Image 1 (cartoon, rainbow, N blue to C red):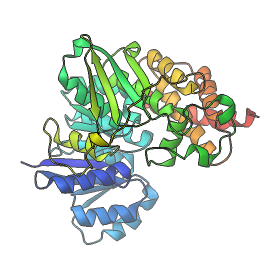
Image 2 (spheres, helix red, strand yellow):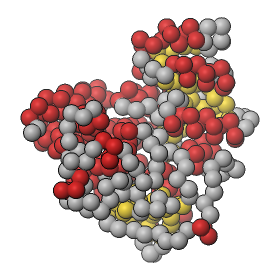
Image 3 (cartoon, rainbow, N blue to C red):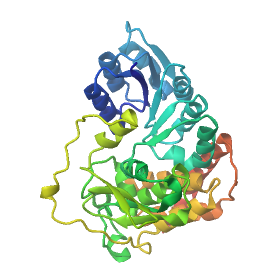
Image 4 (cartoon, rainbow, N blue to C red):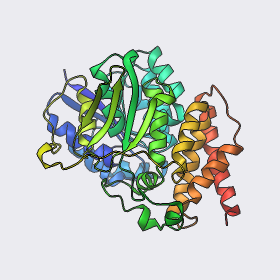
Length: 386
């Protein structure tokens, strides 16, 4: 029987690649549901190509336009974040791949966990903002969560080599972004173009800025803490500029298991969909004879303070990570719009964390309220930065 898949966020980079992967995998995989925020033209094209039974548009102002674009097609159109939750609860959907940016997708991921779906997580918010709640819900319902981002997929794969109790540490690798090796003075006045000039990956603006601040690694530390149920002190970050080793696991006997490959998101997407099996894929294979050197270095947490903050937040737990994530999203948007300087991003995050009183065991409603409050605080505090 074919695996029936819902892709929440199908018009983004992950969603589009997931559809390419599914098409290449063939008859054993069926697209049952798709969703977009406001990119309804592309969503309508995907509907016509892949014939899902459900499509959701989270931006309700775009729903009628989408209905017009798919008029005459036998499909159930859903709207708002509630539409994503409806899809996540459909009985005969096996895998929910979530790539919805922001807090809009949290409810649907928790719904998928409550309904026993296999969850392929591509976006950071579910594990960063609601990791404690999500993993508890997944355990209670016997749900498998397979990461799609390259680093956590690498760790997930490497962990197949040994017992969890024999893990000494996990090692998250990162390219170092466009400012690797720079001093605070050299990046203080970095421009938008400077921050978006990533040396390896072709990503969206927000994620690229996160790489420049090393916020992406900070968020990955928080994700890893919950996803792999491992103490924060057993998570290490290393800079690996070649981006060939996507992450590693060190076991107590001294063995280090690394997952290597080309920088191509189709590999972790496909593994999440075929797990525990593997299949021929569309990603370009790594040519080992073309590699010259693989280098590693420790990150400079004095220059990239977001990484140190990430460790602190991971230790704190509760609503701290919701504040951390929301403040960063708000600050990055301000930077991309030219309203603050590059280093102001981390300053605003620090100020927002200091202002917040952590709730130790939050529910979803409290997490969403915390997210909103943090964004409002950043907007207010930006006026005080000189």
